[in-house]
Length: 173
Length: 185
Image (cartoon, rainbow over all chains, first blue to last red):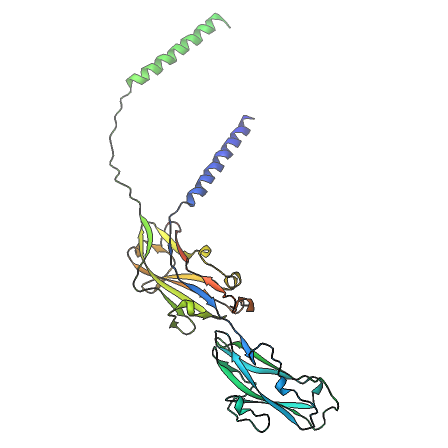
């Protein structure tokens, strides 16, 4: 019994000593210095078509279109963010006109270069290849949708969808 | 107990008392002072050098960023804040490390979660693993690098026209912690 008490007392002393040692190791010197390094701000990537994110391109709409006819109108693509971006025409879908229509996209200097009829005043550049836009920069494209020789008759509500995709230009592959 | 036994015990006790009493009077003793010198503690401080002024660098291009508040970070960016400090490190076995105090960095939770930072300390262009007395009086350079890796990035960390996503470094703090006794090379 006595030896058991000694064991308890000894254990108690060891524990206390260990605690003191742990506390002691936390008392090393420490100093600090505030730098005041300013603020990092994340960029904003914002590609607009026709000034908005989802543009209803009514200028391309038409009725009673005959085979081989086309509709043509300018579309402004802009960088509304605060970082440089690169963009391209990523996809074009024709809905119920699939196989019965085609498109062309021609870069022009301004809307005036894209009359409703006749060939646009073309500038160099492919719509499907990435192009860089710095903040606030705009580019104008002349889009033309042409019906094929044998489009469906009495078709109504066909939707052609152009999808432009943008991504950060910095660090772009 | 027999009387003779009691008598023997009493005599023994008396003898012990006599011996004890005799000891307190009869031993010679002497003492001398020893000059052990003075123990002096060291110091551990860092002070901004002031010159050159701290700078920001875009690691992608290697160019200076004149106004970090006007810079817009994007995924893939790595920016370094460079500041010089004068070190006071006095202590024969002193060793200390410099770390960024993570709690001193605040800002937008999403952007904070997607960025990381690290610090490197240079003395004369050579990277240090610890500050020791060898750096006492030296001007060392702390390079705090902030990285915005692709893997962590989401569109949610973008700024919007309504609100900027920021990492506030106005309270950025470097901790200089004694890391233990300097180990022999």
